[in-house]
View 1 (spheres, rainbow over the protein chains, first blue to last red):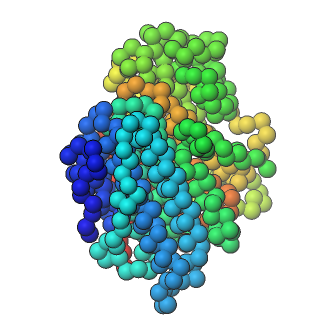
View 2 (view 1 turned 60 degrees about the vertical axis):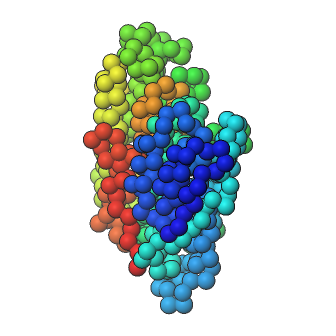
Length: 228
Length: 234
């Protein structure tokens, strides 16, 4: 898979390696590369770290777009073809949350006098072995979300600003939620119901674990369950 | 800790009979209004040697101890559900999941204690936290799930908020690694309770896969999601 390897204008050269590493995200199985990036990120270089994660978000948005294409027209003999509309509704919801992450990362970078990478930096190519089935779309998303959750968590150590660390924690926890639900569905540990499609927006209801600034909401906005 | 976070932690630990005492013990630099406990730098929540993070870490440790006890209370109900409970047939599987989540909270507590000690702080004692079911709680399997979902949500939010108040990068990392785990606990419980997901055919055989690691990324000797193999294609 060919990834963008050139640094954005004004980025230090070291960013190339990080972007190259994180660029493997959409291919799945990139957790190690992402973790390596986070461990190696220089303390105090917050904008570079945020831009690396922004690239990962653009990758994810592109990957979900590609997955949506498959889900809208699954292979004729796909045993899960009937489930494709349900998976599509969830995939588009998750993609929307990645767009929320990207928007906030970009505005945060700008607020710190940085230059956000361009959305075109996210490019998806199917990983080796990917068959284009409905189940493989779920597996691909699960693998990518897992890698992203780890990368965000590791990047918390790399940023110097406490506010940036909180932002990364709030996003990383969201991607961990994406991961676990996709993983459970892919393994038959959990399954959809009659209302999954109509209530897809409730399938991970907030894009951030906690609110991280104006215009964002976190799980604080979700009412407690009442006891019956 | 600031007013908002103290309120949230107190809200979460409202189930604990000694919530005020716990918060006071975790107090310190933020002006806790609790009536007892040490708030000096040399006390349990003091900042000595921890970059000022001891109060936050001890507050989170209190949440973990309350969570561990809450899961024990829930396990008692799941082990012997009320007669006629419509979910009784699921109770043994849910008990396995609840015990699994409880073990992860024990791992969180152990990591928090390690972090506090390594930085020269004094962890609060588990005995300083005692769990009490909410006044309007009626024992049923659904209510156990609701209790856990509410608590996990509050914990995930609190952890994330406290990241912004921590000074030491490794403490922020630890809090983030735990927060993401508790966010996973919450969402699994949430989608089940909302009826937008249901147990799959493999649940009873794969309860350990329901949030497979205690931390999102590995923390010390505790593994993270790095140890979970990618799903194979085809």
